[in-house]
Image (cartoon, rainbow, N blue to C red; front, side, top):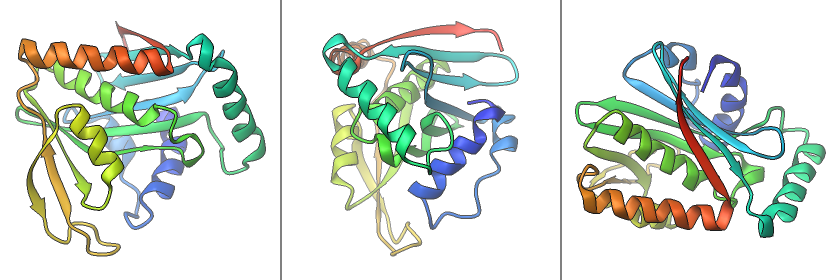
Length: 216
């Protein structure tokens, strides 16, 4: 995520977290060494990209091109949504915010644009968050999730997250509890192998992503 992406991220944040206003100070958080942000966006040729920016370096996750059997339907869906929905004011399709604390990467928020849900974007952002943790040589990935959000919980369990506790009345809008979920040690060969297999499964369904380390 770069400063030019903030308006698009704010649009998604308002829709996904309407009770969490005022908005986070994204400009300040981008400059912090204790936070990391990834964005998924529609680029040329209906590609996705994600990037991690810091004052020193940027990890870019680029070119998620839809697989041939999915190309027509995904391209049509994106074009129709971007053309017909006046609320879509940017090409940002999703974002994830990560707090880097001690040995853990804590996902503080993750969301995709309402018009592009169910297209693998949230899962790709989760993959990116785990890769950031591995890149930063951290040991665990943690997060909170609503007890009622079974779809998100299922995705997190798929990536090895386990319930370790509950935060009572964590969500201000309705006082709902949050499940605290965390991975096992992500640096083990077993976890890395399982994670690699999950990435391949995602690519088979949604397209191949090419990742590379770039200078800022």
